[in-house]
Image (cartoon, helix red, strand yellow):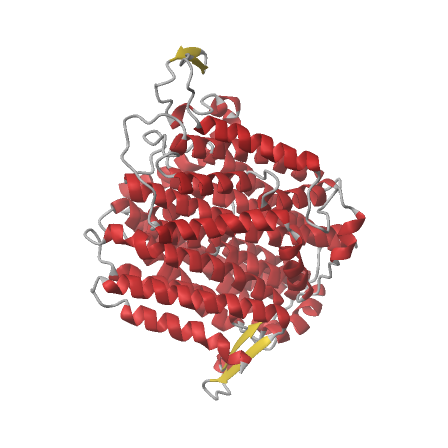
Length: 637
């Protein structure tokens, strides 16, 4: 009977989607409420999956042909999938409750059926990706997830920018999916005699790949490309800063908070559950991680669009997840169980943390848009007194993502630093990660002060958002605080999740290094608490206007009137010049893509057609590469 609970969210979300085809205004509330209820059931599934493995099997076709691999639709929740179900359930619950009021702002402008039909199906396909236990069904659900989410990105169909962003997202992620499809069908399923069940793959594939090195590295390449596009790993990230800001803000929270984490889930499945541990694979993943966190946050610092800033920051945090994942694989392959376990635990901890504080920050950006109608940081300002709850939750999210104690982001980042700084092979990565954390702090000082404390260009009429929107923000803010003060709550779940894929991490071992990782009690030393109170007090003082004489301030080399608004463009004005080499690389890549589009235009090929052509060329190239290496590696096709 417990296993049947897995079907309940599926039924609720399908009903919600069917109801969503109606044009009635009340449908918006019904769909969001049903999505919230299903999210609660998903949370329950996650809690249950941490206690015991749940499995359901269905014999669909009774086929004995090649398609027998699709015959058994298996739903299974082990501790790893349960961990991701908890993230999905909590975030989709908050996004759905938030959307009940937030989406009303679109009533008179857009066809709401695009949202009410696709939103529950988007949650459904993410749920199915996590609970399915068959590689071929995973591909089907993965592609459907892309399909429904791109309609949500293009929800504001009257905006050409939104439609183009959705098209770019679809083309790039579809091209990435080709890498996954070809890798799975041509190599993995052949190696397992076309048995697509995860359990069978985990039993057969590691030994097979241990003696077929060419096949192993081909699979690694294909999966890093295929999953890396969906995760927005640099240099495959360009779709995300365009797509995530254009979606409704509660959808943006899901896109950044959980959808781009599903490739992380599959990387844990493949690289730790299905593949033999190789140190070189770990180093490659770590290198992609450090490139991702470095370049993305350097560009986040320069943004003047609040949601685009948050989108670049989402790419940065994927880097903060890939780095310890790669370091953990490297350590485990070299026999260092302690620091390998800590690094992998840090990767999963940061996966959860980022879901909560980035989901929170996207909701706060949405609340500001709800009241002001803009996300332009140059225009916004002085909203702290008018929107105190939103300002408070934005402050918590900003401090958490910057890694300020005692919030959750501090714990996972501290674990990343400790695990990477212990080895000469990864110590440089750890140093770069620490530097980028400082850049992150600067970025979110800009985000918070530009919206809530600096004087606006002109007076803005705003008030606090409706209660349902505030409750969603407060819940995520509370989780950021609780998981920072009591990190052993999520670490216990993470220990179970890693244990389900064969990585044993004993929480008692962390007590051996209380000053290096996290104390078992979850309490922080008085000096850390004092530092947090000091920073918080200073920020609060910034929100309180002076009652004395107003004096001029000195900004960027000149005296200015305090009442004048400093635009967001003026923040860190000299940063681009100091780090011009970094930005030169990014600008050159953008010009290269634009040049290709121009050349295509000379021959009458529009950019949209060119995107499809590139998609096709990538697919054909991948077919040739996989077939060649598979044959050389000894796989008979």
